[in-house]
Image (cartoon, rainbow, N blue to C red):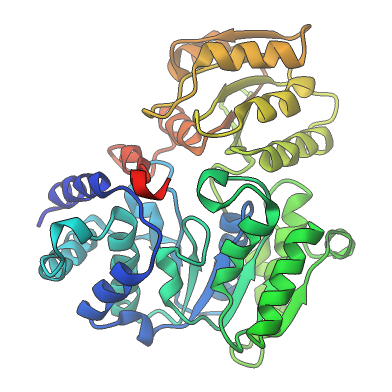
Length: 426
């Protein structure tokens, strides 16, 4: 297979939607030779901060001299972002090779039980990391944890960043229900580390850890703020993610020793695009990109703006998916915006730009909020503004990176992020 053929095949897998359950992934991994058995993992779940925590852990262990695999989702522009070794994206040829190797395995499934896009990509990543002889894999969940395709591994440690409201239609409408899904990555006897602050969610994690006889380490926000070690990423919330990463490294010291220098170097050089990512243009303007796609993320963005950019009121370009609680996000961000331009997201699931603008105005009647036909139009309308924040959906952030000239690939593959839940699972 060629790379374009592989991408087209992956696009075709979206027809199978997304399914909760491990049977397909277990069978596909077995047909591929169970590559996960050749690897060591740190498994990371949570509502927000998963990607940043994964990036920090990857950077620390790479600084320590390990060959580190990184599996994350969604991608911003290129599909290849999802599978990296030592922060090098899997190559186009390697994607094609992995797809060719999995083709015979996929033919072993009847059409009604065909593996989904995410199930195939998870096993592709396992196969690739094994072929690359990775010393350690930082393994991020997709959605939830308990029935997520990534949950076929037994890690060295399980990490749960936090529990907040998101994906309620699939994970449950209370923090306890969401926590139950996230806590599903906890394995018997395997240490678990969490920065969860919500008492009702933490209780679920504590009970699960106790039942599984898994040593539990809690990282509090207060302790994190006292910690002198911080990362290169913007925002006080990254101090909590850094403390979580440090606690993970400490728990794993008997298995994978890491020097203080490697920890400091790793945190100082960590890079995670699209999350409070600041771009300075050649004419001195600032553009901040952040995928604040739920209320907790919006609160984090607002706090970061107040601290890192005090006395500066940015122009917001905002777009969201219709299945998110975007009215909550609008209400949180409205007080810190000078004005807002709302745009549609390049997705069939986009929220109406006009409705988003109305929501901003309802939250702050004094705020000038207008709808634009596209991100390109919005960028053109504020091309002379000194400070712009582009936020909401990560899909919008990916589109912005492309339009601003920062793509990691020659062509966009953002459409591969699109999926739907089968009706019988909604």
